[in-house]
Image 1: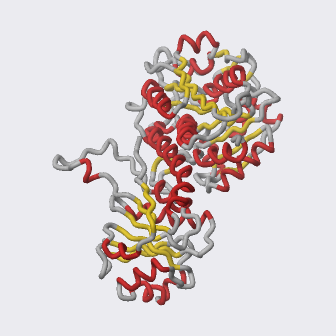
Image 2 (image 1 turned 60 degrees about the vertical axis):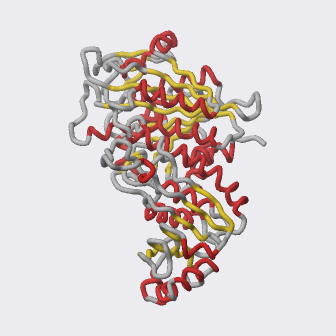
Image 3 (image 1 turned 30 degrees about the horizontal axis):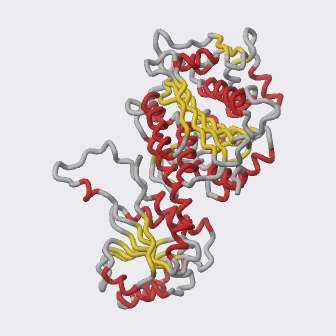
Length: 496
């Protein structure tokens, strides 16, 4: 896993600022007021900060914006990052500021003069998240030393470093989970096979997560005909990984998180167009999020009962591949007429959803999947689509998503959409046509959720991976959903 930038907290000692190497960050309010750290930097640079605040352009700066002074006179640092931030900045502004610092940081060490920040944890987590870089497959020059390429630390200088570190620790644990998710989604499919994905999931055992990998023979005995049909055209064996974190009340029913893990999706016999097919390495994004959440919960030792289940398959065309017109039988016993083999994710989820309910009797379920291109048409890359059979659960998740800055929007469901899934030869079809494509996909999944199980379906097709950078992530995998689901657990499923 890509290791987050090391973070350390230290007592305020402004005498050290002049000799700090790398980058130094100081804070100025929108009306130009400086705290002690900024005043020290201003003095060392012979009034450069004061001159900057008096310039006409500073008045146009928004909270969270950063202005960089390169190679400041009077300091050893290569740059000073001046952060425009109100004294009582909210979480959104703190995240924006932290992200700007993390992006600017590069490999250099960063000293943050956090004296004016009452709660620096949000800023620190954002800086760590934005400093992420996936470069494991890039070759280094022959003379490079690994230590020379490692990023320098992020040091937070503040009045009560022990308290600040304790407050930041959970968020940094969650950042590890986000990094794991990003790594999984960014990996090419020749590396992240179903077997390799399962191996990485087993790595969570080091954190105390109980991991069980169900192989194809076990899936056949369980009757997971829908999931197995999707993977039967591939040489990579289909699997279901079960992750259990049980540190809440002993007999409390767990929250179940279910992820679609299609490690590569050609579309199968209903072959996708060649353009942009390389992006289908991210079709395991839902499984990546579930894995990242389980890492985050274990790393911060959440007092909750949560199980994560992911279906790992590869959708390939071959002589063994399932075909349009085939009828497959799900674990529930319902039959499905396959109209389009590129609507495979719902077949995978159907069996895993049913298995999760039969085995764990969960208090609630949340599934995540890069399920439909229609979701991108509806909401673009700004928000995930949320579908639910329980408004209370959905409101709780939407609040958690909003609190963490991860956008989501609830879309409707209803019996009328079920009409589009009727089949003449089976219990249902796996697609309902172009109209309301994301909704009919959710309606399909709803047939595998019992009436007494609160459930949310999150279609993350537009947010799991983006072609441009976001506030907290470079171009590529975002790790969307790890922070929101961790907050949902913290707000509603932890005890003590």
